[in-house]
Amino acid sequence: MLFELKGLEDIKEHYDVLIAGGGPAALGAAVYARRAGLSVLIVEKVLEGGQLNFTTYIDNYLGFPNIEGAELAKRMKEHAESLGTQFLNGSVEKVILDDETRAVVLDDGRTIQAKVLMIATGTDPKRLNVPGESELIGKGISYCATCDGYFFKEKDVVVVGGGDTAINDALYLSKIARSVTVIHRRDKLRAVKILQEKAFQRPNIKFLFDSVVERFVGENKLERVVVKNVKTNETSELHVEGVFVAIGSVPRSDLVKGFVELDENGYIITNEWMETNVPRLYAIGDVRKKNVRQIVTAVADGAIAAVHAAQNYF
Image 1 (cartoon, rainbow, N blue to C red):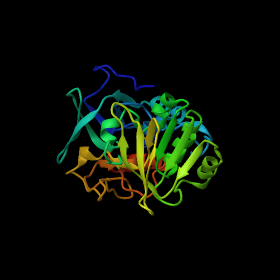
Image 2 (cartoon, one colour; image 1 turned 60 degrees about the vertical axis):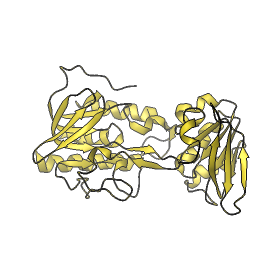
Image 3 (tube, rainbow, N blue to C red; image 1 turned 180 degrees about the horizontal axis):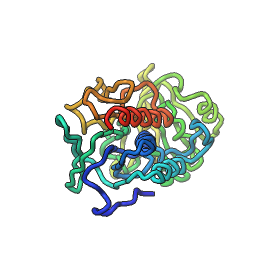
Image 4 (tube, rainbow, N blue to C red; image 1 turned 90 degrees about the horizontal axis):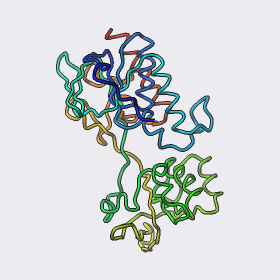
């Protein structure tokens, strides 16, 4: 479900809290900010719940065992909305930060001000950056199994990666595709044990360990994947019709680059209250430098930021 596009008369020019991004961190912040009596606007260009919408089943969010990601996203959005959070389907193109102003410029040219601005823009999938990848995106190469898996029914596909996302993708695709080959550069997976056990038990999932993708080959569509064993340097080819890359993420922090402190990978550095080195500017969720990126930690980030803002700036 897309965010409801509010009319111009519904969106004010100033809010207590404006949140760029609409994932669990943003929705958690909205709930706590609204309970503190603050006006809140969430600006999100795609779907409420962020990456939750592209997760098949979630087993590790307390109180919601084995819930579909899209359903959890829907419930979170409805909770925030029931408290009076406003939502705008749009994109933040620029932030304005000076001594007093915290504002954003939207893709339609409007400027909206807020006393407190929260960056909850999340991450983008990391690319392999190998020959043929850019040319074949959307022609057999994807970064979202739940988005594109359906197009590979009864076909042979590859998943690149060895973490939770990669193995979740492999499990999901194993119900659709004829075969799934997981390519991982190490000699063992990094995914949690329960996911590994499920994957090892699926008869149509096989693994290529100690291996990396060297290049993709195809004219107007993907035809084969050239794989190199990192221990022997031997190469081989896989004739498949789909590849799903799940090797991590890069932060969407460009909006505040040059304003706030970033780590070497571009993640926003905050204090324990989620506040950046710029007062009244917070970073919450996966875009923030942190050790654990999970739904529960994103929601916690939002709650902490909202509580701190309410207690210190209003």
